Image 1 (cartoon, rainbow, N blue to C red):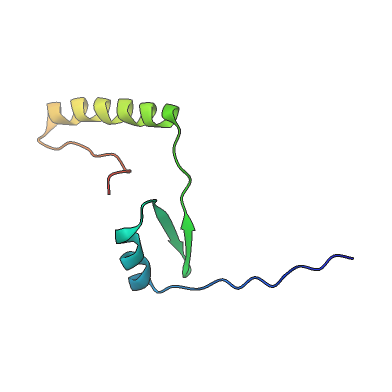
Image 2: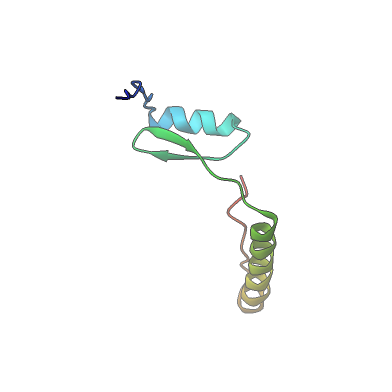
Length: 74
């Protein structure tokens, strides 16, 4: 028979999460008081993102004065 060790998870307030995220090297998600590190993107993902942002900028700049920014921008 195996036993599981008790795991305690610290819960954070939204204000504490935002303060920690300002200084964090890696991006995190906040869910119900839990802070979870986000997975990193791959080279292929970055290339696709750049291509989509470039295409959307070309399209939207031709219609209006608005552009777009990638979601990885902090």
